[in-house]
Image (cartoon, rainbow, N blue to C red; front, top):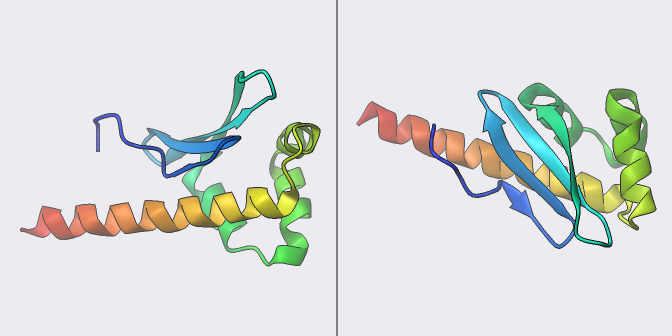
Length: 105
């Protein structure tokens, strides 16, 4: 998995893409179109994706409070951020499983 891959999640304001082994970038786009990136280790992505809805804001804040502040400033709800993280993790798992399946052949 060394070539540039498609993002594992993308919408108008958020993008999550592969960075390096077991690391991803969470990119938040502001109203002017400028992206700010935050490093997101795979274990954190997994932890946040598997967090219950009621505890996600606290967990994101414990990991990186700046992400919460930036998201809220741009009108991105905590629920929207959580959905993005869940969908990104599901896509990452799908790609990994496909890679492992093809590697066995």
